[in-house]
Amino acid sequence: MDYLVFHFKIEPYDEAYSDVLASELCDVGFDSFETISNELTGYIRSDMADLAAIDSLLSTYPIPGVRIRYDYTPVPSADWNSCWESSFEPISIDDLAYIHSPSFPPKQGFQYDIVISPQMAFGSGSHSTTRLMLRLLLSPSASSSSSAPPPSPHSEILSRTTVLDIGSGTGILGIAALLGGCEHLTAIDIDTDSVRNTLENLSLNSLHNYDVREGDLSVISSEQTFDIVLSNIHLNVHLSQMASYSSHLNPGGRLLLSGFFTSDSSELLSKASLSGLELTEMLEENEWCAMSFRKNPSSL
Image (tube, rainbow, N blue to C red):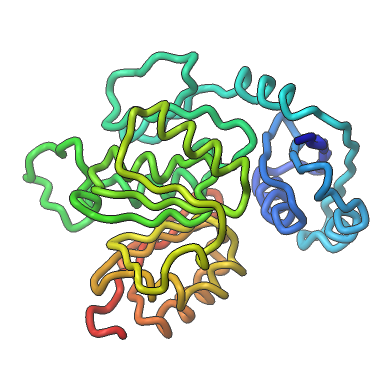
């Protein structure tokens, strides 16, 4: 499948401006990004590229005084994969996770080693939202005693759980969940390439006990529930699917969300409360936000 690569020149450049643009471009079909100097590089399938929609989006860019110009060229998918993999440098997330491609060796000093071959899927660990989700998923809870023994290889909230990863992308969150001790992972994504990449990356990490499906939440039985639901997508998806997220959670289960700005958190909080979900933790980075909710055991 062929892709187009767009080069967006942002003037004046600011990382927050680039993040806002990437978030908006996701809404018109872009699925992967790189940032080099003051340029945002975005990838979109050729059959999904709509120049009129892109021009309209840029004309209504929400930050005044920012000028954005672009050009684009076609890139065969095989060449794109090769280019992406050769430029994918290892990523460190605190002392929690070391994320790297198969061409790099593991590194000591991290609780979790995650091998990723990103290809054409979102979620290599380079974006704030993925890092925030991994911190919520793998870090000891804030209520843990400082005199507690060193953490085991298993995450406090993951041990012996079932996990649903919505919009798996590369599969990085599901991989982290399995490494952290969850008993079974179910991962879904609407994109065929993402499903393929999720399966490849799960295999690269020698993991088992997972089910990966192509589709949205409708491919999950309405009766099937999980201890933890993960979703790092877009604000509008969260708002429209909040009740469904809650219905797929066991009483007392956890919902971890990201993919939105801190400025949108109050709207999400209101929607979550209506679905019987209580905020337990919130993290922020570069104006992006991630939230952890617990389902009220008395919720229907």
